[in-house]
Image 1 (tube, rainbow, N blue to C red):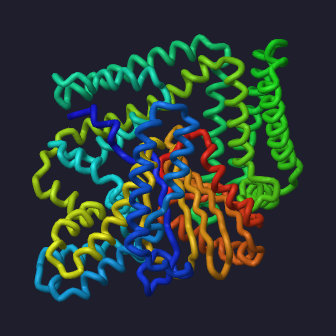
Image 2 (image 1 turned 180 degrees about the vertical axis):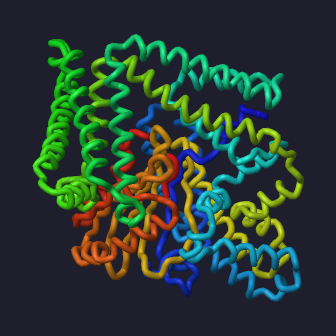
Image 3 (image 1 turned 45 degrees about the vertical axis):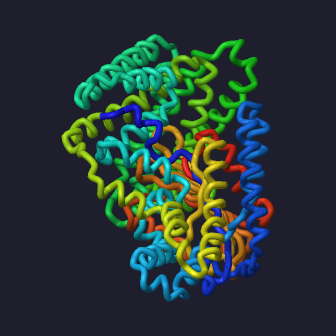
Length: 554
């Protein structure tokens, strides 16, 4: 196994840009004014501007980050083919109009391939998004490099490499990179050495954690999180009528939560000191934690005042319901866990880092075990798989078309149209290279939507974030921020520009939650509010600032 390939595994950042033009003209969206015909001179000028931009990039790569950021913005704005789906269909029509193409099997196949790249939005349900990104042209060279790798890795091994790439522990990452450079090791030996590295790191982190006075508090963060997840699952099962709850179990759960909160408050008092109290960051987080803890205690205290068992069940069910006006009990516990974790960073940052390392190591070791069991499934790639990579890529198809269309009567028109799209794809590649990720487009057609942006991020502890910004013809703008944790719990926050749209979603939220549940996810949080259009735009833009870093931007 070639572990060195881990730096090329997966997608780190993606920005998918989509235009909106009438469907009958073959574009992504319906309600954007049709693109005007551009003269050959204007196209050539635009392509020349790409060359100038490339020269600037090469000249200024060694300069400050500020200049690089400026170049990235200029590259994003230099849109030669902003509605690439429209251009793809126009090129396919130009090929169809030629009798010569009909008599040429190779060109006919390329024409059909162009049409296959255009997808109705409904296909999002059946075609993996990562496959669409991989075939968009911006990853052609990377895909070719991967295709030339003689080994075909199982999904579990690819997941392991992706997890390694996203490690926050730089020291551990450096050790694994050094291991990857050892070409004398076979797959089995590589996995064995990797396990040794992980176990050594685990032992070091445990030693640091055990020697910390904040150990019980750090473990308390996990206890709060676990209790929150337990209540989420209980609330979901109760709403689905697949679970029952008794007064005795309610009292037991409430007692455990109260005991945990009391112990955490007492331990915080024991480790606090005058120096810590002078830290504004520590004081602010401690104050927030104390406030949240008090809210939990008050909520549990109200349960003690409930007289009969029927009312107790009703009160507790309401307390963990997502429709609770001031937030569910599990949301309060989750917030308390976050604030406690931030507080502990000021008390003992070394131990906090060791605890985070242990969490990462636990997940990585688990994935290593799965990958080890699949190591016998590593296969040798065939030439047909390399050919498939080329045949399923837009950039490769356009390059082949340029090469094979020279004999056509409209060869100049075909070449010009293909060059225009290739230049736009290469602009995406410039931005991708400078920003350390992938920016691209997806040629989807959605009649009801004028414009859309989608962004994905990967956080810590196997947590993922997505933000979807849509501008509907009838309902206006909507921004959806979703987070997925533990591969099961999803939290959804929605902002609409129109109150009518908000009311429509609220009226149908049960159907939405059922659809989410049908694919095996549990809604752990759901909120919606009206927000001005300009604030919605800033909300999407500010997604840049989240600390977990980009995986995909669309």
